[in-house]
Amino acid sequence: MKDFLQFELLHLGEIDIRVFHILVIGGVVLATKLILIILRRFFKRQIQQEKFDEGRGWAFYQIIKYIVIVAAIAVGLELIGIKLTLLLAGSAALLVGFGLGVQQQFNDMVSGLVLLFEGTVSIGDIVELEGLVGRITEVNIRTSQLITREGIIIIVPNSKLVSDMVINWSHNRKSTRFKVGVGIAYGSDVKKASEILEAAAAINPEVAKKPKPFARFIDFGSSSLDLEIIFWSKNMWQIEGIKSEIRYEIYRQFEKQGIVIPFPQRDIHIKSNQSI
Image (cartoon, rainbow, N blue to C red; front, side, top):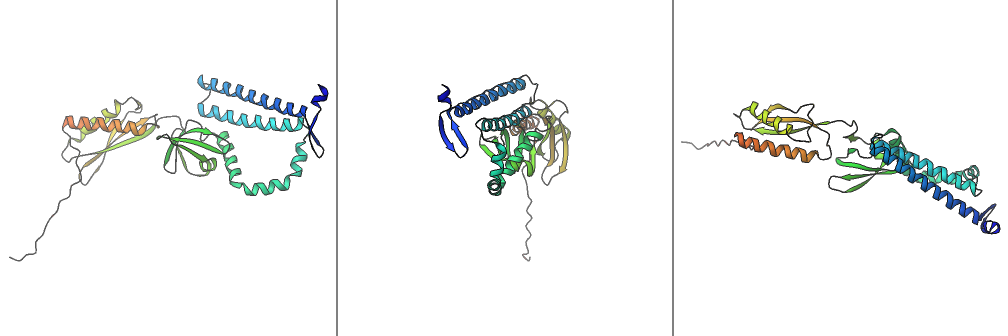
């Protein structure tokens, strides 16, 4: 058995790859996978028990996962007799040339570490980037994954989430303010219309009770009196549907109360130069 373990499979200069080395590498790989499975289950349990925020919990898991993988690679190389210091010194020139060719990828990887450590964007966050709104489903070392409201998966380089202007709708973990505008005909009861707007928002289950929704008289429009309802909601992901429900209720109550939503009107005056 001992002779079998010491059987030489490959000879590279001063390095001999033996059956024992293959078994050691296999053991390191299996141990690494086992550790990662245990860590994943631990963080999942902590998140389910609400001891960790979901985004931060998975961010910590990703950081620890990369540390474990790097450590496993280092241990595996040392166990089969490859010295990391000699390997790095011998490949320094190659690494410099390689680094120049993958600057953007390296930038994305550094940005990924920044995201994981800072937590400015984490799993579950709803972000807006270049006019595109999506939920973060994965934050990896080089790229992050978004899913839009239409169910489209978008792969975004991490450098864009760090260097570009990103709106994180759920970063503060509190309610966000939204508004819905409407115009009513001149001569309508503005106070009554404002009460309808506030009631339409207040009865929606996705609208926060505190602060309370309130209506504003914005301006005297060209063909309408312009109002808007201000409300707060934690459900940023479905906010367009919530706004739609509020509009339905406003329109239903306006019809019931006889309040008219006007359409743009223009008066045309015709002058005749015909001599009498």
